[in-house]
Length: 404
Image 1 (cartoon, rainbow, N blue to C red):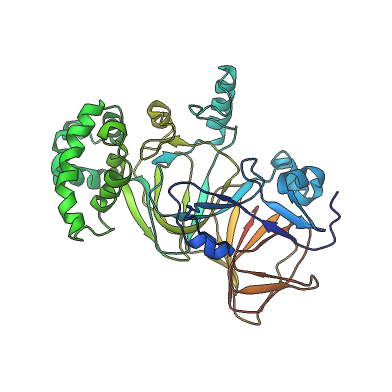
Image 2 (tube, rainbow, N blue to C red; image 1 turned 120 degrees about the vertical axis):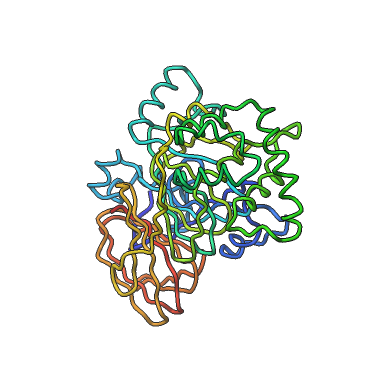
């Protein structure tokens, strides 16, 4: 058993090497050489069984989820009771070099019903065609560390109508939007026979290619990302991925460093490019609609999407103190805070009622009375009730995951 003799516990995240990840940001952040030129896609800091963080204490490194089972008090009474003794969030850093899948997530009630149904059908938990890996929802909030591009929610009906009129290959889709029903249009393209998808998208690829090669497709245009899909997400046999339609029908959003966005249940989205910190409910439940080699289940996706137009709401953070900003969302599972310290500045929050994970992105901070400093890429876990204070040895940027 670990004896807790420190206010905070050093935490080592788990790296995920997905093919879409970048080659430089995370290795440089973590001080890891990448001589094999491996993609470093995500850094996970949490208690998820597929990549638990390791707590460093008394010369040992033990998985966080095992320690939380052993030390129930680390979650605090409220979190312990509300979330069945589990850490309710998963904290990440993502480096998106190539676009991720078109996807959305279920509500808590949908997840519980779907998980129960697939269990009753005898679908193994690790089956690639399984949609519900657990009984939890998966809302998520992200804050950009670099210029970040993503798709987020359906565009307005007027914008979609303009798109169908202006994109020559989409002229034949206008009858599906005659009643201004986003659902009918999206259902039509998502259930369209593959040969019809190819017939629409092949001419688009031919039309856009010379523009892309001439540098005449800016990232602010869906055509730029359509070309990324044509270059990186062709299907076997030279077929075209129907996920390209979503690039034109969803809002294309640019988020600058320090800005964030929240993805609630049913909001279709896809990360396109950039580096961010992300905080989500502790779940694996994803419905995918294309631009991926993973399982795509169109009927399940259509059942769980919000088809109302979305006006993207960029979060800038609400001031908590002179050094801290909170990115508040409706999710009860998590809250993401940004902490910006100048050299010599002291930071002492109230003792947390629930668990916290703090990640240093840049700079260096020391924990008062602890004898240890944390530099860029290093993180620590704060058990509930443990008050702590930090002193900035350099100008420093930190992010903190907590339960609101």
